[in-house]
Length: 382
Image (cartoon, rainbow, N blue to C red; front, side, top):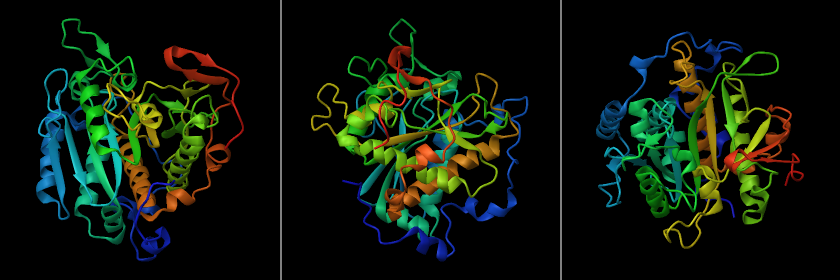
């Protein structure tokens, strides 16, 4: 069964009324192919949002929103532990009144900053813009927006969080949703909230290194599915439902971004391997992970992720590309939300994933513990 949208607005009708998914989309003609700049030599530290910046911006959005934005902390919701390892409050904002709940998270890795900007920009637009497209989103969806999943890693400018149990062990929060995991307080808190929300769809914003295609041109965004379609795992989940739906979600994003000449999009890979990793958030929610009996019904849903160029700790993010790196995330996320609201996502040809989105010639699958699985693909596309 496809996630319900309860909306009669089609995307064609929205656009015919002169409505774009975000205000940024109105300036399409200004960008031609090849205009995404080289990153430049300096990390834009002054422009990168820290924890206090995020909290301040959330409160500003909440105060100024015309259509109801609620900002809260997990501790205020009665979740324990409702704070990070270092004791920082974990913030979430909700907007919309629709029956379809959507989970949106950024900066699960502290050295990958632009998920914060993406989520705050999207939240402000949905919360205040009165245009038909935003109204469709608000009426069809309820967005649960997590701008900064990992505040401790953000403040330390590292990928991980750091355990405060005397070991100072670093934990990758995107490998900490597994039956034998949940070492970090953040993982327990966010998982608990997820079991209460029971979303229908999820999106995660990441960064990767500076990636180039076979011709040496920059790849500005990679679209990822953490359990590979046609791979060892996903075709066997829910009768292949999420294998089909994740391809539709990313196919819709890819098709939408093709209208913007400054983006160059491909499929995510780690070297010559497609990922099939079960310990991450996006995989756990598709597998319906029941940890400590908190998800006894096995609730699950499709979830995908974006990978933007560069990260801060590697010094590869650069100040010159900051604006357009954030912009492409906002466009992709906004188009995806509008597609969910109108139902257009579920009309997307799932073969776009295989036939139109560029990818390397995969040698196999990279799985948990860096295990390699062959052959590739495991089976033909569903």
